[in-house]
Image 1: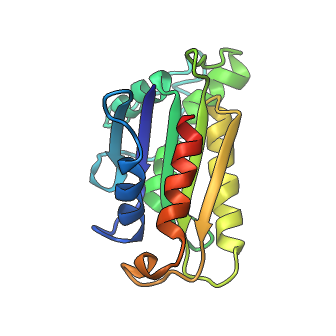
Image 2: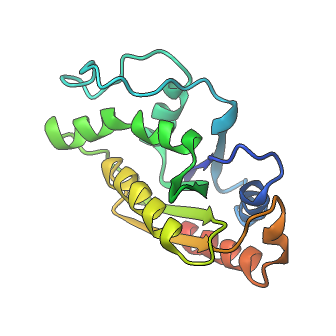
Length: 189
């Protein structure tokens, strides 16, 4: 299987990165091809809603998204990991999602849905928020759900943790590491 992972956190060795490190341990690198994109380190411009993808479904902006577009087309499994910022995904994650407007156009206007391999296409959203309630997780989850549907991922799971504010607080959570590993195991089955 081809698995792509988006780290949408700007924090180095923060909660999201720590969870992803544990998540990736579950994946057998001999059986599966894994590509990790650290969105904070990439040159991705915002969508200009220029109409350049209207007739082709292919974005005309030249930047690091070209690597992401190819990976999405080939992916069987996609993991999106982002902290919650103001009840949404991080800016790094959102800019990548917005640039996938070309996939939305391809699927819904040009009627060319992405096809999966024999494994099908599934997704996982991993998120961490500082608030005690799950409002931010629900709101950011809706953004990621729209992204997944636009890139022809009909099924995904969201796993979120609330009350996680400081850089490595996730390590104090009693079940977070185990929960994320279990979610990844379900994803690759």
